[in-house]
Image (tube, rainbow, N blue to C red; front, side, top):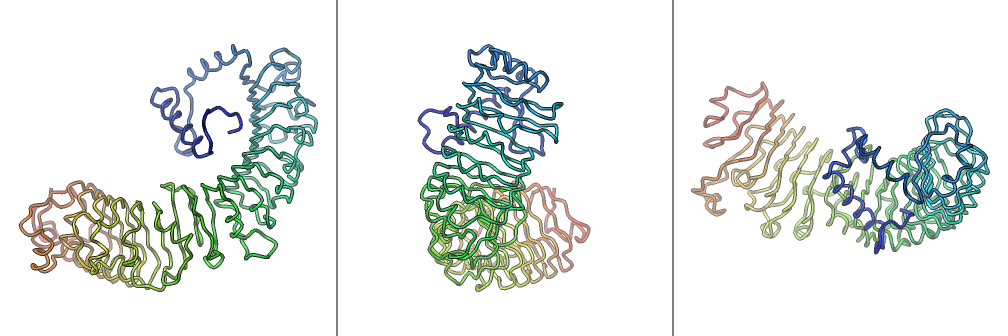
Length: 511
């Protein structure tokens, strides 16, 4: 962002989607490669491609210059420095940059610092009046270089991983559209940020020392489309106090992408809307995760399900692709009859540490199940549910949960069985099943009454159970008698040592 590289792009989300699509094309062509495992959000360029790209760029009338800091001051007097539009500078040796670079056409400046004592003089940016993109990541600033205020055209500023103290000067960069302070040591956002009315993206991820966002700063960023604050500011207050409150988000009518942590559900205003969000990670309660599997993730901790959460959160619940409930109270069921038209996009569900929960779904009420509940759900995890009696409170029709691929059940001491036979027959996509530390578990699959089998239309069928199952882990199940009775299975499985002999555990031979 900041260089207007894409035509007919109106939003950050469109620009990001376009960029990701181009990256995939380049990867498919072998011009880019996936990065190493510890850098999931990066790609890398093969050395030979890098050399060719650098050679091509050097011949451009407005070259993209990649250089080291050696001889930088002399280079700054050459014609090349006067004509270049992009500079990527690797600083390895020098402790201080020149007093300035005269680059009147420069639009993008990236500084890569390997020298922790590198100093940037206050006058350094005075000769870069057209600069639009500036990346000074991993620097140490007591105060920002004063010449930054001469960058009237700056659109993007990255200070990722910087040691920061006074950053009030940022308020003078009134054309700024993208500001990233991710991973920095910033402790307080300056009041001067209210002047950044053109800001469209604010990245505060991993700002673990950030404790003060003065009231009305967020609400003043009227053009903001993306706000990201994971592992960062959590000192939200109720309206009227000096720190930021969540109701300020209602003033951000362009906001489509939001990632925040909220320590307590009581801080959520009832009238908070979130109506325009297309992508979100909202974590209510404690959470230390860094990776999220979907574009729309919601975690609720210590929430009373019987109370109205407000229309904003209720609508997010319905649209979420990844849901986590922790310490849920006020109900025996995770899902109600009123939820039957919802959760059509849910892919991952986790429920944990909720002693009030006895059933995940009230499948006795067939109105809940008649539309094919949870058609996209891929993963279901149930952990430390002390009073869970059944996952489904009755058999469910085939078609419900038909996309489920992983099923994990941990530490549910009152759960005696996992699946009805008719339910198991519907899980044709299941690939992994894990059941651990369930003290009362006697069978994995049980028959419902013969009449119920006939009513559900399963009698006489020869459906193969779990045709795609490739991993079965059963561990610490002291009461387990068998997997099921009178049951055919051809899935390849491996069992823990607590299982009885293979012939008595399964009714038929297991491959």
